[in-house]
Image 1 (cartoon, rainbow, N blue to C red):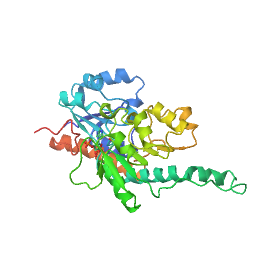
Image 2: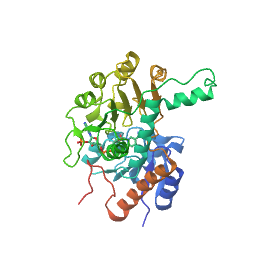
Image 3: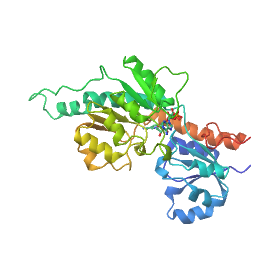
Image 4: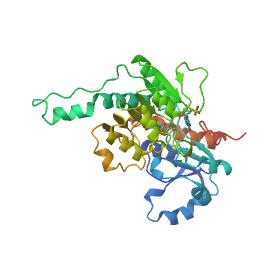
Length: 320
Ligand code: NDP
């Protein structure tokens, strides 16, 4: 039987490319001198697409060009870069990589929270710059006595909460609905959650439904001692309002892993001393990225071998 043909628009882990190459005919679009001409040649035969955030938005314009497309396998649990509704309308299955990165992202979230509160990067610079002999490092804010609000108590939010329980801090949450089996306090709006806590951790999906869920009113409610942590997506926060809140002392500090227009981080944000800024590394360990890549490959294999994907997203369930 002919091996299915897979299109890869942008670079991926070498291990993923190798594994895909063993089972499929793989077209590496980014390596082509004339990608449009190349695409026109192979498009009628392409049945699968392996996507990552580097591929840009995968939407109806891609589906129009790939008439034989059956499956889009996304490298990542967040698939706001893929128009899953348009895929569903055409009977194209979209898969993501849940379950293999939750603990890694939760570890990073706790690290970012502590780094932001205790000024760990700033303290490291204090030593490296030789400033310690001149003056002590200033006293920092503390996690002690703080109340934590988790905006988006899903798979990763729960992994964050499990860790925070060991830190002996009260936890509350907001989602669109209260979860029956969860004992943490529930607040029915982001503003109500922010008003009830001094640390707000955002870990909801990106996309239209959560656009600017954290706005000026939420930051105002978080208050002058409030610490904001975003490991979700940049689109979830009104970035201009966040910068203003940090500049004006409306909130105390922020730890961010994600931004509105990555990899561009505004100079005004980079200039703020009360921030810890990471380059979207929530899941970016060798071990976890390899596991994510493995699931991309396994989804494509399962689809073409059995007609069922392993982890389809909610918008595009497995057929029959
Ligand atoms: P889940 O789907 O398991 O959980 C998402 C949670 O968000 C749910 O509890 C849901 O609750 C809540 N939610 C969804 N929409 C809304 C809304 N409009 N308002 C309020 N709450 C909402 O996802 P994961 O925990 O697996 O991942 C969450 C996101 O984290 C990913 O989509 C991705 O964007 C981001 N992420 C970031 C990473 C990084 O590197 N920084 C790495 C991995 C993921 P309910 O349905 O009750 O509203």
